[in-house]
Image (cartoon, rainbow over all chains, first blue to last red; front, side, top):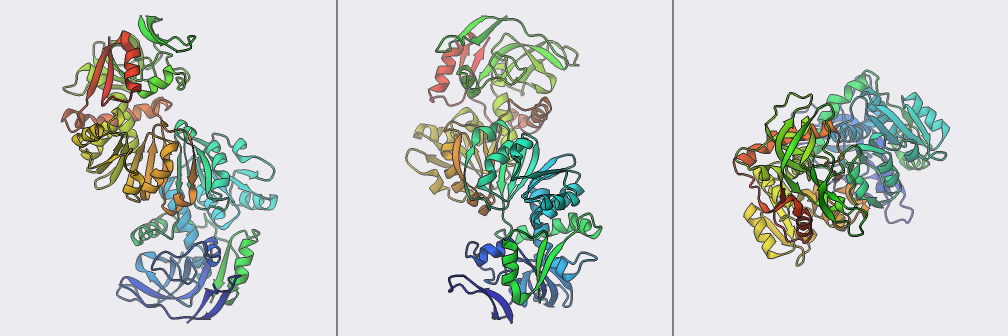
Length: 318
Length: 318
């Protein structure tokens, strides 16, 4: 079959579209013919050699896709069913093996490209803000990078949950985009110190910056506040003031989705279908594809995502 | 009335037993004639000027006591009732004003001295291990300083909850004491590196060391593990590796009890009565008074607690 792989021998680690072995199924897996795959920041890291797949996962990139079941293996799934899939890898291939617990229905009214690019963000945002931080009505939630794929989704989810949403972004255009999604407090981090503006006021922070923002985030958190970290764009090692952590009764948590057990992933998919799919289907969360590319042009999609100018999701189509 | 106060003008900040104003009641408070007060590490810090009472709280030390209600104020409490009390301060005085939500019954079979010295440890340990970390059967819990007041209580609570308990302590005598309380894994931190022995295996860590142990604790935690910090005996500022936090999906939390709102404290007292009082009354948690002192000898009690040789709680008696 055809797939995008990383030509790791070359110094610039090109993505190339080539022939590879078709995957074989293990117990509990189905084979899906991929129609579309979402592009994620984790793919960029993996292509650069910084985010190796977990043991046993496909060497092919791609953390989410949508397509059609062509082999149900030993499961009770039906061949021909269209599904969206949460993947540990393999979405950039023509076929991918998927554990049954990571199959999700196509949200009503969604195209396969839309479904393919909503799985990772929906499961990431829900598992962190819904299941871990337990965002509730009336809380103030700070979302860094509000105009990105994760940020756009998180703004709308938090508004649907009845929270007040503060965002940071680096330009007026991006802040306007966040305002249109429902964000209440807009902070241009190039012009203002968000930790001063929001001092001691945030119940929950969804962080993607890691080390660079830890101090500011702890300042912005209210008593009993929680930070959930899902990205390290500002580095990994920071000084933490544990005196402040105790005095304000803070919680600093971090997660990644891909390394979780099959049981965890299945539980997250179930909970996401229950709580998030209805919000997608009734339009409370709008899912925005910024651009689609033929699968052979994956390298261009990666370059565009790295550019930082993308507001919404990128999709590769077979 | 008589009370212990800190003579702050003197360089060595002596504790002196002297005459002070009797407290007046605010709405929702009762006046308790103190029979006994527990000695806590927070008292030592307060005496040294490092742990000032929260705004509005008594300047008199003492985070817990037991005694008799002598004025019910505008509450429905009964004068003459013996009670144990969680305090923001004031326990080292002959009388103390207590918010109604922080009154707790004397556990059946407990003396007033025993009750006076179990409140702070019970509420601290339950709010952290029961309510925040949600310790459950089969988990491995690491308790640093297992032979101290907090540690001894935490070992027994975790065993009652069905967890496996690992402890660190600095001598064989202290480890033997922990073993007698039910600890399963005993580590002398002077001889072994606990983070190597317990690498990637602890679901929950109750930490009192702060900065000094953060790196080791994060190494000892299993995937999805949580550290709850309640002390800073090893300093406040540490380097944190957020890459490891995300990769292992860790949670680092910290709390103090005294700064919480009245509502929070009332909720913690209720939950502690529900879940911990039965364990005290049926002997699953044995509460050990190491030594009692007349109130006038509070300074000696403080010196003894600082010595590090205490296994169990110290009590001041009126």
